[in-house]
Picture 1 (cartoon, rainbow, N blue to C red):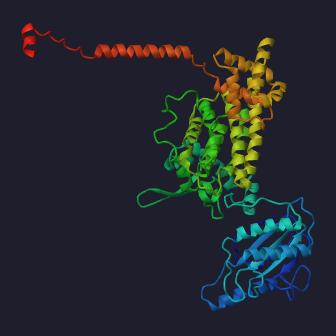
Picture 2 (cartoon, rainbow, N blue to C red; picture 1 turned 180 degrees about the vertical axis):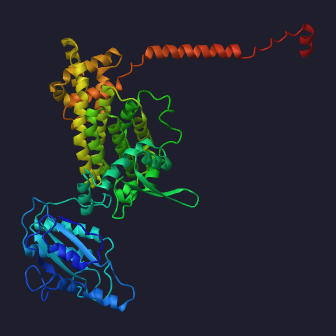
Picture 3 (cartoon, rainbow, N blue to C red; picture 1 turned 90 degrees about the horizontal axis):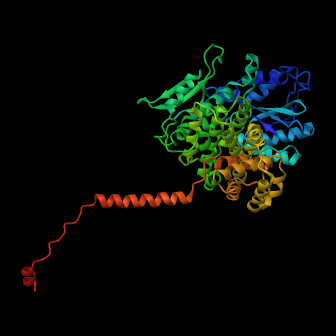
Length: 570
C-alpha cells in the first residue's frame, strides 16, 4: 500500500472538483466519502444531490477562514492531500475498511491524532476500487497548525502495519535514501513531449554517466555542460563552487523559462558535497594517461581490484564506499562495452544506483582503487578483448552478489532488491560475453588422456563441486584453459584452488564457465620460473659484491718494521 503525500495546496474547492469529477480519462466512478473528521452533518456531493462542492469546501476550510480573519498574515498552503493506493494483486477492500485505513493514516501523519477533539478537519473520498484520496485543511479547530514534520515517514511505517493487519501485499520499509517519485505532472509532460523518461530521471542518468570521467567538481560541471545539459551553479564570494542545479533542454515552464532541478533533489547521493567527496577520494596524482607500472589493461586491473571486494566489506563505512564505487565501475563498463552487451550492463547500472546509497556514511577514500580503475575504463580509447571483458563482467556478477549479501545482512531491503535486479542483467551480459570466448576454446580441446588428468585436478582441488563442473557443457573449454595455463608454466591444481577461493561456486549457475573467466584472468601471464629467478638473484648478488669490491678503496700495505724499530718496541 502506497500513501503519497502531495505538496501543500491553496484551493480546497479545486481539489474537490477533481476528486468528484470524471477524472482525466473518465476513471472516476461513484466518488463518495468513506470517512472524515465528523460522521454527522457532513455534506457529501457523491451521495446527497443537494450537497455542493462549495458547501463541502467551506465546511473543511472553516478553521482556516477563522484564523485568517484574526491574523493579518493569511495562510495559503493549507490543503493537505494524500492518495492511498492498494497493490493491483490486493483483495477488494470495503468502504468500511478504507475508512479505517484513512483514520489510521491521518492519526499517523499528525492531521488528527487519536483522541484529539481539536484536530484538523479531513475527509477520505473513494472513487475507485483500489484507492482513496484523503483531503485535510491544516489548521486545527483551536487555530494552531499541526506538527507534520516527518509525516511521510510515519505514514509509510503505518502503511507497513496496515498491510500486515489487512493481509495485503507487504512492501519494504523506506530509509529516506530513495529518489523522489515522478509527479503526475512530470509524467504527463514527458508523454506529451514524447520523452521516455521524466526530466529528473533523464538528468539522473546523465549525472551518473559523468562521474567516472572527472576528477573534481569543476570538471564535473564542465562535463555536464559539454554533454548539452543546462547547468546553474552557485558560488561563494571567493568563487568556490557551493551548489548546482541542472535542466533538461526543452523542459520549460509556462513562461518559457528553463526548469532546473538541484542535484540533491534528483537523488540524495547527487548533491554537490556527496559528489565532491567521491571525486576527491581518488589519489590526486593518478590520471588515466599517467599511471605506470601496473600490469594489464584497465579491464584486467578492474577485475583484479574486484578480487578483494569481499574483504573490504568488514567495516560498514568502507563497505558503503566500495559499493558506491562498484556502481561507478558498472556505469563505466556500460559506456565502453560492445553494443551487444551495452543494453544489459546499462540496465544493471540503472538498477544498481539504488544499491549505491544507504544511511551509512561512506569512507570514500577507502575505495580509491576501485574508483580509479572505473575512471581509467571510462577514459580509455580502446575497448576490451573478449576474454578481458568476459572476466570483468563475471567479476561484476560476483561483486554484485557480495554487495547484495551485505545489504541483506544490514537489513537494507530496497538496496538488496536493487542488487538482485542488477544481478539479473549482469548475468545475462556475462553469458553473452562468454560466447566468443567459448567459440575460440571449444574447437581445440586437450587430448582425452590430458582431460582425464585435468579432471583429477578438478576432483582434488574443488571436490564439493567437481561433479557439477565436469557435467557442465563448458567443461571441455575449461580443460582447454587449464591446458593453456599449464603450458605457460602454471599448475592447474593450484589455479583451481585459487579461483574457488576468490569466488565461491555454490551460487554459480554454471561453475565451469565461472572458472574459465577466473583462470583466464589469473593465468594470462607466464608463471615465474623459480629456478631462473634464483639463478638471476645469485648472479645479481655476485655482481653487486664484485662491484663493491672494485669500488671500495684498496687498503695501504703496512711497511714491515726494521730491526732497529723492532728493538725499540721491545
